[in-house]
Length: 328
Image 1: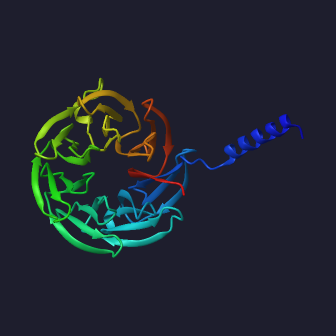
Image 2 (image 1 turned 180 degrees about the vertical axis):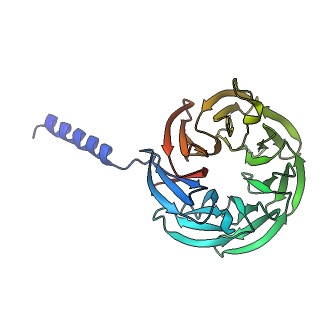
Image 3 (image 1 turned 30 degrees about the vertical axis):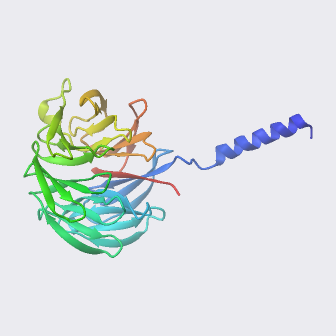
C-alpha cells in the first residue's frame, strides 16, 4: 500500500469510528407523568422515548442521587418516594416521607434528602442510604418548593398557602427566617454564587428575588405577554444557567418560557412551548433545556445557545417533573 493510500485508509477508519461511537454528550431525560403513574426516559440525542418506568401513584418531584446511579421520584398519593436504577430502570427501594410528598432535594454532599410534604406542613429529612427519617421541620401551609444553596448551608422551602419562603439551616434543621413573597410560591432556585434565591409565585404572577445573607427582597421579575391575560401568566419552574447570566421561568397556562437577564431582572424573550408548562431541567452541559408541558402531554426542547424551541417530544399524561442524567 502506498503512503497516500495508507493515510486515506486511516482517515476513513477514524471517520467511521467517530460516526459509530456512542455520543459522549447524550443524556437520559427522566420525566414523571403525574396522571399515568410512569416515568418516560428520553434519549437527548435522538429526542425519542426509549423506555417507560412504571411508578407508584401520582409521581411528581424527581431528582438524581447516589452519584447519578439512582433516580428518586415522589409517589405523592402513596405517601412515599421510590428509587429506580438510572441504567437498568429497575426498582431499587422505597424511601419514607410524610403525607403527599411533592418536591425533593439533596444536600450538596449527596445525603441527606429533604422533601416537602404538602399535607402536613413539614419538610422531612431522610437518610437515603439507611432509608430512615432523620427529623421533620415545621414550615408553612402546603410546602412545595425546595432550593439548596451551593455551599450546602441553607435550604429554602416555599409554602403555597402561607406565601412564604422559609430559610432552614441545613445542618441544625432549624427554621432561621421567613420571607413573605407573592401568592402561591412554587419553586426556589439559588443563583450559582449562592447570593440570591429566586422564588416563583404562581398566582402572584411574579418571581421574587431575595438576598440570601440579609433575607431582604431585592426586587421582583414581572411578565407581560401580548394577547395573554395576566391571570394566565403563572410562574412555576425556574432554572438559572451556571454562569449566572440567564434565568428561565416556566409560565404555566401562558404556554411560554421567559428568558430573564439575571443582573437586570428584565425579560429578554418569551419562548412558545407546550400547554401549561410546569417544570424545567437542563442537560449537565446546559446545551439543552427540557420543559414539562402538563396538558399537552409533551416535553419541549430548548436550544440554550440560540434560545430556540427545536422539538416537542410526546411523553405520558400530565408530565410534571424532569431531571437529566448522563448515559454510562
